[in-house]
Amino acid sequence: MQVGALFGRYRLDRQLSVDASGEVWAAFDTVTHRHVAVRALPAEATEDDAYRERFERDADIAARVRHPNVIPVQDFGQIADRLFVATPLTHGTILQTMLRSSGAMDVSFAVGVVEQLASALEAVHVAGLRDQYVTSANVLVQDDGSVYLTEVGLPTNLGAASGVYGLTTVLYECLTGTYFPSSSRNELQRRPSAVNPAVPVGMDVVIARGTAAELARRYRSAGELAAAARAAAPAPAPQHVADVAPATSRVDRNRRGLIAGLAVAAIIAVTVVGGVILGSGPSSPDVSGPAPSSAAATARSGTSPTAGAPSSSEQPQPPPQAEIQPEDPPVRQEAAQPTPTPQPAPQVPPAPAPAPAPAPAPPPAASAPGVLPCYPGYEHTPPPDGPCLPPGSPPAQAPAPAPAPAPAPAPEVLPCYPGYVHTPPPDGPCWAP
Image 1 (cartoon, rainbow, N blue to C red):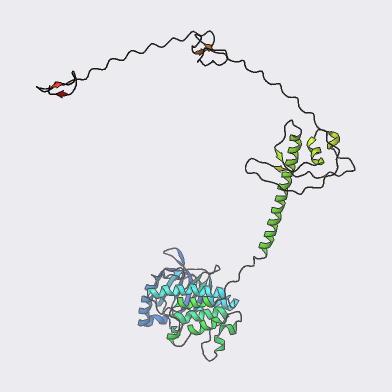
Image 2: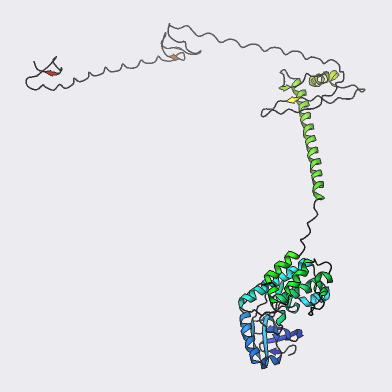
């Protein structure tokens, strides 16, 4: 196999990896016109009939698995003397390569990787592939944190790496950046917290149970292992936002205080201006409050240049606070009364001249006894008790008399039986004579 050569219907573009399980090539499917990854097994695999039968069975099951964390099988079979599996070409980094170059992962990120792999393994096991292996070499990680299980359905001799045990060793590698010790002689090195101090001690218990020699002591499923790892991981640190809230509260309080002060000042200004304008009119303004001082009286006079303007040696005093009576509901604005400064006596404006009273309306003309008088401008037509009409109107015609009612018909009187007469006649009851 070489670059540019055709492997069946696949054109080989570049070699991705070589290991004991064969070669992996990035290829182009000349039938579907899609880029794929082709895994070609060693030629010796075709010589083992039992292995070839298992390969075909597992590849057929893997082709039916649909899971977001499993790279599906698109094609499989044998070309010349090589068994192969074709899958979609997915970009990412092999987990093993990432750990060797970058070292241990953050604990929370490592647990997230294991959770995605556990979900993929559960789906594969449900499909019927109970011996699916998992190592850091067949896990693909993308930049956004998505994790994919590769080489699903590919038979291997890595029996120890299958199921819960294999997933536990992947968790150990993510936490420490090193391989899991295959020998149990060095128990200290099997504790991830001893290799990486950032790992919580609770992870030591998770690793010990997931790699226990006795199957009965291990976790019963990959999902149970992932749940235990999540429980042992430290909780995310809370965000430090406490220092921002008080500052914001102080700003809000200052802003509210400023707005309230401006509102009070505006009310005082409106009150004083209203007093000046209304105090100079002929009527009393609708303002109630304490007895006005000399300064307040001066402010209300308004029109006197001598009493209203302070001298150059005097400082203007703040106007006294009045109580405004709005329509609904009344609100009283309280303010401290300043000490009044002696002011010249105010000039009292002259009282307004009273307006002349309107002439009384002429009394209605006399009418006949028992007849109500007409309104002004109307007269009885014809006098003295005719209807009230404007002068010169023709007299109203008297209504025609109502016709006399017709006499009621006499009731019908039935004759008495022979030997009886009406008593008294003519319509009395029938009695014997």
